[in-house]
Length: 173
Image (cartoon, rainbow, N blue to C red; front, side, top):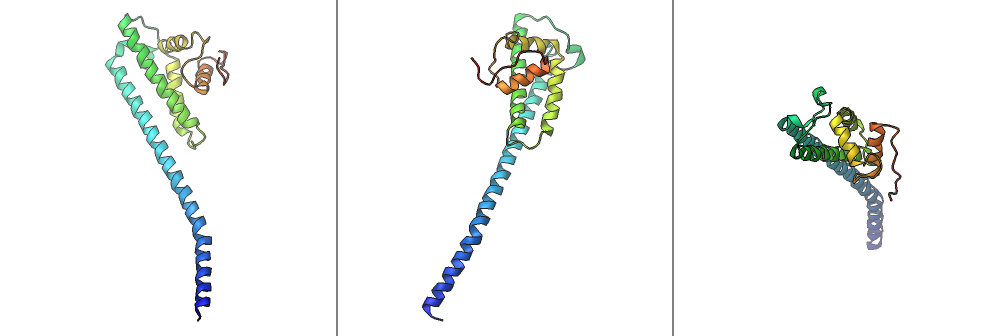
């Protein structure tokens, strides 16, 4: 075998390696990125669920604030100013968790909507709580103003609260 033939064979082998190796590397990269994204999303679900458990612990520490979803807390409670501030803060915390869960499960990357079903039940339970309903009316200015929450989430909440409440456009004034 001459040097020219050996060089020709090596060029052929190098071409085959590139022809096969590059697409395999690209596919492996995208598979790796998809796995990484799923792990990150799962970690976010765990974080939101842990924060919700923290909220539930706070409901146990403050049973008189009317912030749980238990039937005895569905009626409006009258609170002293300090307790009303605590209730507002805890409902804001809860609503932020609801919003985060909403966007996690409604993002284009999300494939599993099963996580959202449990959050939908929590939201429905809290929207039966008159204390939470009052909080939501105050946050939205009795549905006359936008909140600091995302438009899609706020429209979702408005629909759940009462389908006849005004919806927000994607572009707020």
